[in-house]
Image 1 (cartoon, rainbow, N blue to C red):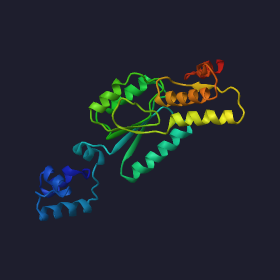
Image 2 (image 1 turned 180 degrees about the horizontal axis):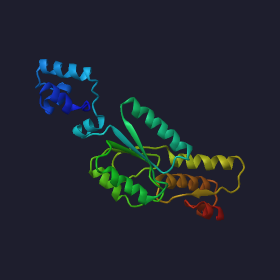
Image 3 (image 1 turned 90 degrees about the horizontal axis):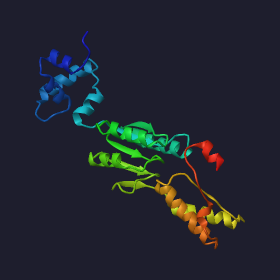
Amino acid sequence: MDPVNLKRLAKELNLAVSTVSRALSDSYDISVETKEKVLSLARKLNYQPNPYARSLRKRNSNTIAVIVPEIANNFFSLVIDGIEEIAQANGYHVLIYLTHENYQKEAAFIRLLLNGRVDGVLMSLASETADISHLQDLSKANIPIVFFDRICEEIPTVKVTTNDYESGYLATKHLFERGSKAVSYLAFSGNLSIDQNRMQGYLDAVRDQNIKNAEQYVVHCGIDRAENEKK
């Protein structure tokens, strides 16, 4: 038995495959009589259209890519849950890509997505990302991109952030108000705007306490846990 596809419907109705396809899409150039014949046979044979093939014809995939540094962090887990909930409610699939803070992985994922596999990208930058040429390529390809949390200032697009400067300032001020005499800041990436802004808030809060050389209390960390513990 032949599979129930457009070719089989066309064969049994003695119609061209293109005619059957347009009838199923309710095209204006197909007569009502032909549409009824096609739809009747499609229901009888329980024909199910191939959503992937349809998306290729429409030049969209109904798929969104989400690129994040990790999912062990509770913040990113919650973000992914929220994205999937909204995407599914609107008929979209979600592909998750983990960079593990690695620039090379992030760039490779972007190159993969440049072939039109997705309709849009939501991403938070890896801590190692300094070269943004891969992000510029994505923007030039007219693939919509939205940055969240860890953003790229140079790409003109929507960015979803919190007030990182204020967070750094208020957190530091709170510790001094609780009696702390010396407060350190653990910096994890000089490339990310969130770290730069939080550190600036910290430095300003320390200086407001009339403490000189605030930079000496900044500890620069990386993704190597063992090296961080030595500091």
